Image (cartoon, rainbow, N blue to C red):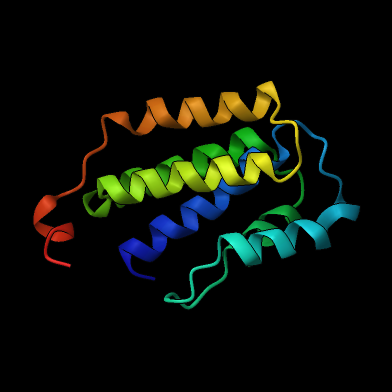
Length: 133
């Protein structure tokens, strides 16, 4: 995968973190959640599906939202050179959409989103890369 695809992989992980941070989305709701992700978040310009990423993570044994969050942040930091302000905004928008899928947005979900905002505030990509697109 390219660095930009890796960043999108990380948002799949962050979507998982938000969706499961409050522990209320059960495995039985998997199909409904997958359909929402497919409609709202999948990016057809890449060779992978965000919903597939989320469920690959879900299928791993003993994975928890804080661990997945750390994986995503590591991926973002590794590929931060390619992180444009627009992509940062898109990631936050995606996390907010995932939180809103099952109203109300809980304190746990809001906490994950706010933590992410703080964690990426000081991460700046290279404008030479993202301005030439």
